Image (cartoon, rainbow, N blue to C red; front, side):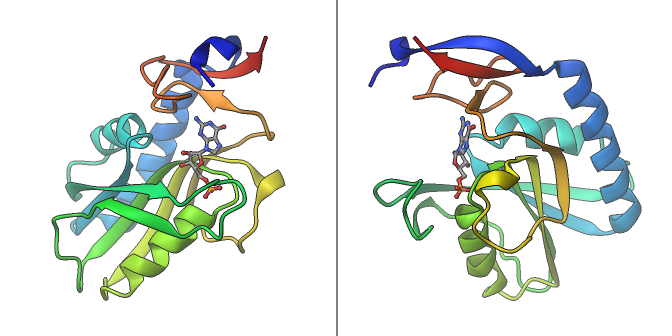
Length: 180
Ligand code: 5GP
């Protein structure tokens, strides 16, 4: 299925709205981790733009570090157990460190829950989760979110890091797409 099947329909969240919410999230994180080293671990590729804006909105007293994980789901992501294949692990040793796992969107929550368990096994001092978007309608796991940007309806969205078949990550706003 090519991207030609889908087209941008309407904006769900403008860049202004996103930016204001990220400032609020960054203020909460700064409050809690003032003076601490904090390792932001982004899930490639969708979280890159969100995480870049988030870390630049932090108070300078937070000693923020950045690392990345890349995963791919086995088979059909919407029906899988959430088991993911690690394509790229993070470089940082996280035992006894403060870590925030950053994802673009939580749909069923299986990916985030799997990654959280995997990182927990490495013995971080604290591990929290942060997602820009949550779709509660499809949630299959108990709440594991510490920081959430927006709760959205069950619609497929692109832009601001989120793609459809690799396309539209660069859009500054978040859009709903429709099939035509
Ligand atoms: P989960 O394991 O929570 O079901 O799946 C999360 C992943 O599904 C996200 O990281 C993202 O790659 C993909 N995903 C879920 N909903 C959307 C959506 O509306 N738009 C895009 N672009 N990806 C989505």
